[in-house]
Amino acid sequence: MRKPLLALLTLALAAPFAPLAQAHTAGDIIIRGGAATVDPHEDSSRISTTATGAIGDTSAGVDSSTQLGLTGTYMFTDHLGIELLAATPFSHDISVSGLDAALGAANGTFDGSFADAKQLPPTLSLQYYPLDSQSKVQPYVGAGLNYTLFFDEGLTSRQKTNGFSNLELDDSFGLALQAGMDVMLTDNILVNAAVWYIDIDTQATAEHSALGKVKVDVDIDPWVYMVGLGYKF
Image (cartoon, rainbow, N blue to C red):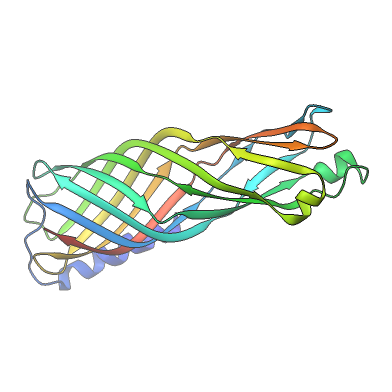
C-alpha cells in the first residue's frame, strides 16, 4: 500500500499551492490516464494432474505488470459518478513450484517460469466524492464489478519440451473497491492517484503427455495502482 498512499499524500500536500479551480459538478466527464501497475497477491491451490491427483507442496504464482491505464467518469450529481477502468493489455509471467520435488526427473524439470498470459480488467464502479463541488481537492471512494479477460496464453519453450500443451486460463468476474484523489490544476486539468483492490480468480488447465490433464486454481486478487493526469470536459 505504500505506493498509492505516498502518491495521495503528495497530492494532498501540493493542493494548497495549486491555483484556484472549479472541481467536479453534475454533467462533467473526466478522463484520466497514467501508469497502472497490477500487483497480484495470489494464493493458489495445489497443482493436480489426472495421473497423480493433487500434489502436495505445489503452487502457481503470477508476477506484476505495468501498462497504460485509462479511466472515464461521468458525474451524474456533484457527489456521485460512474467510472469505467480500462488499460492496454497487461502481460504476466506464470511460475510453478514444488513439481520437481514431487515428481522427480522422470517427467522433466518443471519448477520456475511456466507460461505467460495477457489480460484486460475492465471495471465499472460507482464513485462517491464527499467534498463540496467547488473544492479543488477531490478524494473519492468507489465500488463496482470487474470482468477480467485472459488471452494469448503461451507456455515457455522448456515446458513445451517437457510435454505440456493447450494452456487455458478461465476468465474472471468479481467485486472491486477503489480509493483515489484528484487535484485540480486548472478548471480542466487535474493530477490523479488511485488504487483498486480487485477480486480476480482463475483456473489454469493444460495437457501433459504423461500426466494427463493438469490444473490449478489461483486467487490473483491484485492491488492496482495508477498515477497520472486527467482532463475534465
